[in-house]
Image (cartoon, rainbow, N blue to C red; front, side, top):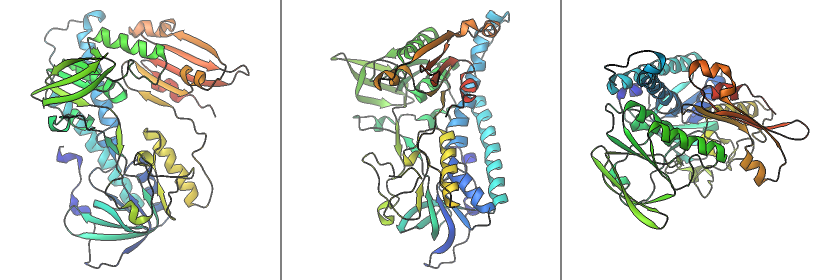
Length: 445
């Protein structure tokens, strides 16, 4: 990754050479959404707070995930308008995509976001300790500083927010192929000739469409029969049609048995599809098959913090771990993998640290996938309602019925709501250009 995404490791504070732990009111391991807001809030209350982070100030969202990906996706959206320009009465002669320029636009945004975060830390009086932290005892973290040396920090309360990373599973040859994850894909300085995408979920679909719009040939390989297979069938069908219309090839119901080659040069996947093996070849490989919690190797057992069989930290509905005085927030605690949910985790911990009670139970989880058109939902979908035996009425409206979409030439998609007999709204799904904003306005409790 480009070093502009990091801050100078000398900003980690002194180490006096003593093995005695430095005492803090709150020690935070990680710098994600919940972590940083806890640090800022407790710091402004006058508490002594230390936040330990290896690399990314502000966490994944402003550095390598949510905001950078939407930046690149928007560049792809602009590119798509150029290629559609004759539809709007504009010539498309001499259209050329410069991936270094796309990347530079994204990097400038990230630089600005990091500056904002650093200013917030300074205003809160919170200390940033740059290095790799691991528990060496109850509520005690040893940090191997990026600039050399170590520090030992102990908190009256400790918050773990180490997040997750892209999963590279044990498929033979996959790791050796050095595939892209979303992190490397957002740093590309060239347009892949033929991008193979393992995974037809949110990350895979967003980046597949973006790279296709930049000019790549793109093939999605997924073990499920439907894209975004946890959504309703009409949603999956609409996504299949979208891929077809944009020229994205789909290899569905396909289990990847092995990988060969090196991403960026030549790659080949052997897949089993309907009991028959076939080969899928390309030049680059992007893996988007899930997330793995960043909980291994950080000494959780030394702190008495237990994890689930999948490696996520065990927490109760107040986000307390199995160790007294230790909390866990965000994706590493098994919370839904959205920035706004991590922010709500912050609110839960904030209230409980203040002696009040707030829980995660029963909260709504609105979310959006930033394909074009966007897919957003809050509450139940039809598949979930049927599985739970819940009766509902369905109201469904095509986006074509909204005359504004005709003026924009953005008529693809629909809105639908699931409603109980007592007129309580169970869920709302929208596939449309402005789906994220529409869904965000929903405030059902």
